[in-house]
Image (tube, rainbow, N blue to C red; front, side):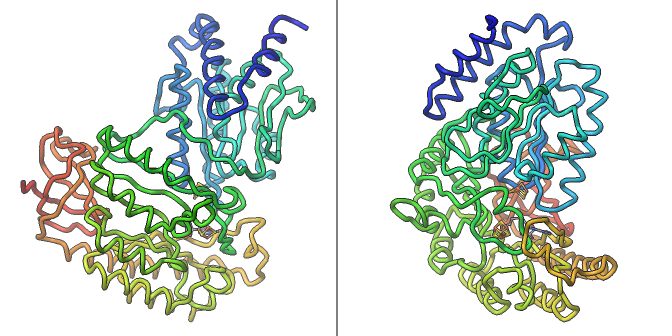
Amino acid sequence: MNENNTGYKNIKEMAPSAEPERQYYFIKETKKLLKNRFEEYKTSFGTFPKYCVVTFGCQMNARDSEKLSGILKELGFSETEDETEADFVLFNTCTVRENANDRLYGRIGRLKHVKAMNPHMIIGICGCMMQEPDEIEKIKKKYPQIDLIFGTHNLYTFPELIYDLIMKREGESVEIADLGNDVLFSSDYKGRHNSGKRVISVWKDTKDIVEALPNDRKYPFKQGVNIMFGCNNFCSYCIVPYVRGRERSRKPEDILNEVKALAEDGVKEIMLLGQNVNSYGKNLPEPMSFAELLSEVERIEGIERIRFMTSHPKDLSDELIAVMAASHKICRQFHLPLQSGSSSVLKRMNRVYDKERFLERAEALKKAMPDIAISTDIIVGFPGETEEDFLETLDVVEKVRFDSAFTFIYSKREGTPAAKYEDQIPEAVIKDRFDRLLALQNRISEEECKKREGKTLPVLVEELNPHDSKLLTGRLESNGVVHFEGPKELIGKIVNVRLDEAKGFYYMGSLND
Ligand code: SAH
Ligand code: SF4
Ligand code: F3S
């Protein structure tokens, strides 16, 4: 046994078993390792190691990337936006539609040459796509440039996995810990050592929620806050429940303490995140509804705007609408995913509401808050969707008059019930329906945008306009974008702006304070 080996084994054995202490311990150990090798690395890097986290997918993934980025910064890496000049590139993936997967393979293919010139370079992949064993097999076979793979459930073990990877690259025989969870895929598990140089560790699911990981916040004035993880709904087209696992709610005190700390740090706007926020708290030892949680968050001083995402129409309660209507902080914006306007398609999608119920819920929102902006998600070309079904979708779009809509072409996801449905729709038919839906929604979005023209409304100033540095860019409560002239000192503040001209999807305005 060489000296290094004893060191590795000792360090693993001495690691605390409680989390997040264990991961902070591995951050400390990895930092020591990197420091020892700094001179050696520096000669080939030329500078201190840089990292780049590339994020695909939804707000949940964006939030996870902040944690991953926080860990890399703690280790002493500095950030770069350019993956070709980074020494550590991590792709945080999405698999909700097929094209998300294709985009990833294009990106990692291009990095092969970059890696050939930088022997210390590490390329990792994590996130939803890595919960699919077929994708892992594909990477193992076709993409030798990938060094590290982990999944959604063991994201918090990132520090320990980096430590294992560095040691493995130096010739150690490593053993990847399961930390009490069922393993889906692992390169070096319980003595089953693999001769390659990569580390793969993916779990089937987990019951744990690990709090207080390092964090690298993207904006000083707004922040996403997880309130729950996973999804239990199993809509028949959707892969999310398979890759994100069962619903787990964070304890209210953990959420509230996080929001309080953010408020003290100057954050004005928070976005509460979950795949179905309406089922928040159902499985807590002391159950609590989402509406109750919102009321608690509302009381936190310093927070001026509250948003949340996503709310499933099936259990959008009157209680939630009432809490929103009475609130001065919850933004008058609601993302209410329709998916389809046809009751029979909705039934086969397992959405548990029908066209009438959706229209009734949208109406209830508008009645309680006439100025509310409703946005939605719509899938075109679900298996078996007839022209009549599609016309029902257009009908709901006409009736609800969404401010904006994310429209998606149905993508077949292996392992979901809908992938087995026989009557998949021909591409040309889908394309035609998609274009008609888009044309209708664009017209409605423009008309809805126009309705606010001339009004003076509060805007949270977010940044200098990337195309014209004389202009500032901010967001309305409705989530609409406004450009206006003003000093950059206003970034992070809420100011009143007159919406001079509606431009379809955004406004040109002027400061009115
Ligand atoms: N939890 C959220 C949605 C998360 S996924 C909800 O239930 O509303 C975001 C959006 O991706 C979904 O609303 C849906 O419109 C779309 N989507 C999910 N699976 C899809 C698939 N197989 N094909 C096309 N679009 C899909
Ligand atoms: Fe997917 Fe449905 Fe869950 Fe949303 S609610 S994540 S669409 S299964
Ligand atoms: Fe994609 Fe995973 Fe979000 S599949 S949409 S990144 S939960």
